[in-house]
Length: 527
Picture 1 (cartoon, helix red, strand yellow):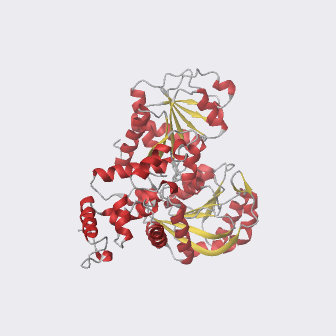
Picture 2: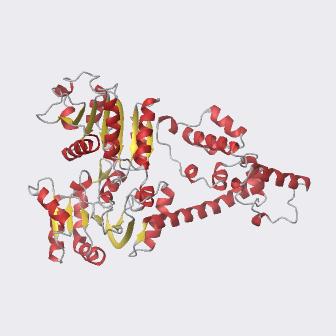
Picture 3: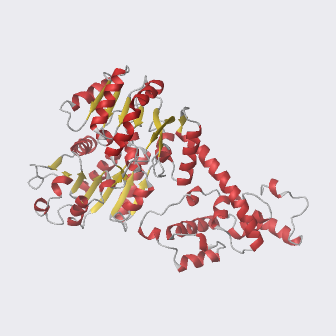
């Protein structure tokens, strides 16, 4: 199987980490972009090198998918470590293992600590749980790869407690732009559901409380679905099985062909097949289908299980992001949940790295409630709005700086001037990155003309120093040139060449540090 460009890049990045200084590394690929294919090819390479590999997962469907994909891509078969099956008597070099089985002390102790050379954790956002950590601690000498579909920075920061590095990340917007995933349109439904009385447990809303809050609105929601998704194949996520079953009945009574599946459904496989073939056009579930189930023709997702956990939200929406013949986009229905908490996930959570942009995008979608909006376009508009707000704030800050005659450049001014969104939106994720800047970093930044007091983390300082070094090699303007020229009204000096800025500064200096009359700073382009 020939890998896609991003899949090949991911494979190479992971193996580079393992061959370098990182034995525990992380790979982030959105749902539908073939993460199982990638780690199957990685495992194939490790087996060719004579290493024994373990694929860990928490659900049987994930283990079966991994074993099937590994065989399809490489011809390698797997032993199984689950329930009554054991890999200890097998000559296969790859094992798929159930965490529920391996975590048991009596079972784990049957394995020598060096039995597995490589461990791959599917759905790696579970890796910090006690069960996974028990297994990983037992095989402490193994190389570890965590694979997850969520791009959530909060999750990544937590995962940084165990994983040493993010080897590779392929984002949802990039996958959509490259044509590997379906475009997403979101519509905010102006139906206000009150969550103010819903409690929180284990970091998310209590399912039982959500059921009570949601129940009075189910008939109205069914009416909204008629308006937006009557001709679409729809998956609905609800908080409890009883709510899911009740909503199925409401939908059927209102003209939909709806089915419901849950963990206790004896005919679950048959229902899923019938839904896939078109016998039903709506499938209700109580969080059963977040992982390990694929139906590419799904083109509408309704999230009636509000959550603060971005990884969970991404998994729900991910059920509809795959490409399928005749499918033009995925429609995501977003309801106006009323809550005093600001952590609630919205469509913006899928596509925005910056919390600032996500908040602005959510505001814009709410203002345009009832009108479907392409997520990429909505994110771009929100980014432009945020940049405009930053520029306004920067203008005020520059005025203050001029009055203080500060000799060093404010980091925000530098980032805005060079149009570095990766710097302004940076959030530290791993260990050392979250520490304060070191004395050496602060000294280097100050020597290069950057005011270090407003840089909060060592990761940001490292990224900024690296950018300054690259700009110097490329012959671009220095922070001090930017400060001086933008202080006199010139714009976007960060995108000029060093020699262009130097020539202009020499002219200004020769004119008594006044801008020559034949130059209009706001119109000057540096060319």
